Amino acid sequence: MTDLYDRRYYAERTGAIDPSNDLETLRYFFFDIYDKYKGYLYFYYSYNADIYIAGKTKMDIWPIEDNIRYYDEVKLFTVMELIYDHIEDIGIEETIITKKAYRSHINTILKNYNGEYELSKDGEILKISPLGFETLIEEIVETNDPENIDSRVKYAISKFSRYNSSIEDKKDAVRTLGDVLEYLGKFGIKLDNKDDSDLFKIINGFDIRHHNREQQSCYDKDVWYDWMFYTFFASIRILLKLNDEKFDLKIQHTG
Picture (cartoon, rainbow, N blue to C red):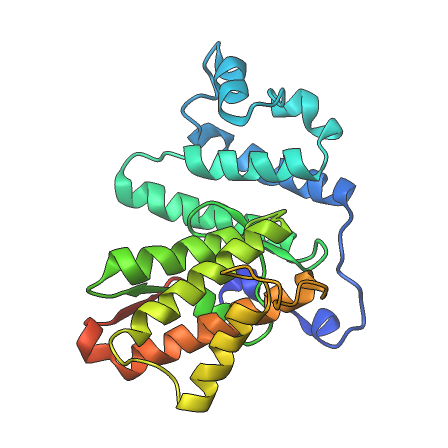
């Protein structure tokens, strides 16, 4: 069943209207959401909230009521994350529910802003994954080897997907997934010989690791790193699922 906040009605589904928001509209919608949730912020009524927030964000952005009109995209996204992190309700379960509701509201307005961003369950503004990969990225995978698999994959996702990630961030994420594939290969866990060989030709031939003069470096890194990341990521998931008993695999869909 589709979540109410993800529901797209007829006019939008058929392309009869363009739902895209500009930055000014996004600020307007965010302020309305913030106004509903500010009572859940434990620092809201504190006399030194501006000092606390300046220390956390390294920016002069508080109070929101006075400064939101001046927010650029970086400041606005930073505040969205800040609010999510500091929501507190009367109990743990209530806090989880309230944070989830806030996140749903934020994602409702983010999905119509360039169609590129979402607020993750971890409270980070991330780029939306390409069609077909969204559910994979949202899965929380647990194995019996968290140090060499789980934590590295999670690190790569965060490094690659976070807002304003650089080319070097993407390269680091791809390299990390390559390390996981290499680690799995030590146990004989790999794709069919040709596919596995092709993957490592890409890793070692495109200036990702082990730099040498024969590597290719003059290519559109932004496009190729995207392709490499999702290819390596999907390959790791396939290998883990094919060997689920060996790794005591558990998958949780966060939604």
